Image (cartoon, rainbow, N blue to C red; front, side):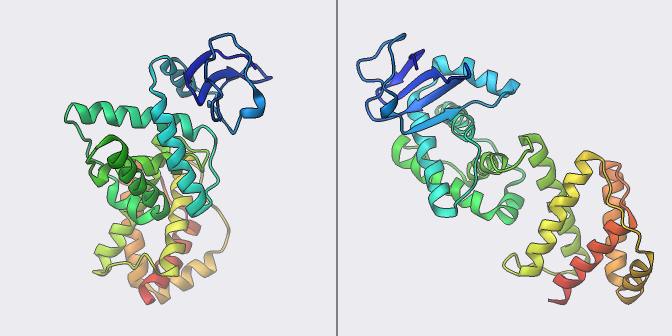
Length: 276
């Protein structure tokens, strides 16, 4: 491997055998090195890769001005997520998070902190990722003297959600929004507060995430079982009435028509959390 850019003593931009740009990390791997020098591959401890997307190309151009300290910070945050929650993350999290942290730092110096309209739902639906975000705020306070609101923990959490799925950030925002809206409708209709520690609530939440993904793709779930639908509808009329409100909301807001099968399983999950 040949050095293309020395980021600091421990980080070097180079290319792998496939000709793809990567960042390699290792103690002293960039010490007294210059562009064009051969890298001691035995020193490599970690390899950071770029996504093959427009966003990935943006990160590559951004590298020329990037402060390597944000890669180090990202590395510490990712290590915490791996050690604490054993998350399965794409390698691109390191570069994406570094980019994000540098943006946060730049805005903070100008007195800007962005509100996060999805914070409540992120905290409710993605608890582990949110805790990683909270840990990141502690690190940023210790190492950069930044006093950040919890809104930022939510934004950092979204990078970890994104790194565990095939969805991009826009899709994750939409999924989180849809699930949050449905859960709020259930709580308002029955005048209850859902217990996010309850296993049945977690099953409802998971069901809604998959439903929201189908909504995004415009694909419906079909399974011919009209008999069971009628049984559940008659047995739990108030749950059915709640689901009709959800159906109307989804149709009005997202122009998606829920199938009977989707309504059926939603009724079953809502009845479980309500009964509990």
